[in-house]
Amino acid sequence: MRVIDSHTEGEPTRTIIDGGPDLGDGPLAERRQRFAERFDHVRSFAVNEPRGSDAVVGALVCAPVDPTAAAGVIFFNNVGYLGMCGHGTIGVAVTLHHLGRLALGTHRFETPVGMVSVDLLSANEAEIENVPSYRHRAAVAVEVPGLGQVVGDIAWGGNWFFLVSEAPHALTLAAVPHLTRAADAVATALEHAGIRGADGARIDHVEFFGPPVAADADSRNFVLCPGGAYDRSPCGTGTSAKLACLAADGKLPPGRPWVQESVVGSRFEARYLPGPSGTIIPRIRGRAYVVADATLIRTPGDPFADGLRG
Ligand code: PYC
Image (cartoon, rainbow, N blue to C red; front, side, top):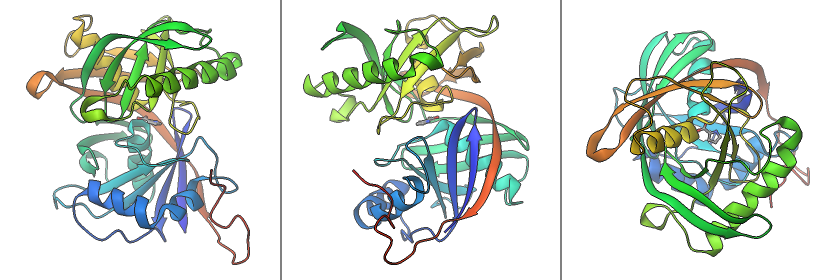
């Protein structure tokens, strides 16, 4: 399998260029289902140890249903599949440009949760327009062992998020183990309490917020992804969910920039436009860099040929 590795504001993306599973055709959501049912070992092979790590998000680029789209993309990680991935979309666009397969300018990508667009502004910078995002419920209280009552908003930004405005620990790299444990406890408590997103969807991302470090940023975050790794970037879908909450609270008007810092100090510049039926359309700008062009090898007899799986 040939892969190109990139990082977007510190968060890795591994794009499969050759040797990925043939998922056939049809809507991307159906192809993602096929990926999970028939080729899950390929997901683990591509992103899990010993070839990858818990932090890597994989991207399978495939033919789109809509011929006007540049590509279809299915994102996955160490434990499963994502709806959308903001940092990953920027990473894929920069990767395809690196390969000479995507020109600077505006392109559309199909994902399992809808069409997104990418303005590739330079070899290392892109702005995505995400799927319509919205706040589902405000100020939901959940009892979390060790933390007490935690209150947060539930919002959709291409994945489901629980957004807590006051982080239980300092938003520093040194505190990542504490933040990870706390966010994991929140996710578990939500699950036990039966607190879910629309249509009973599992809330699989937890986001803590606090004041920014940079004087020109608006906020700093820590985002725990399903699978237990934290997002090194400010999380494109998480920032979209944040914009939806700010819009719902009347705290950020359409078009006004919002600079979201990550726990590692990288940043996305974000804004939104009004969307259909009370949703917002987030736009997220960030930088990505290609870091490797590699061939992943599977040796018969290797006891971990398909990667470490839980
Ligand atoms: O940037 O949307 C994102 C994302 C989701 C999970 C990791 N990154």
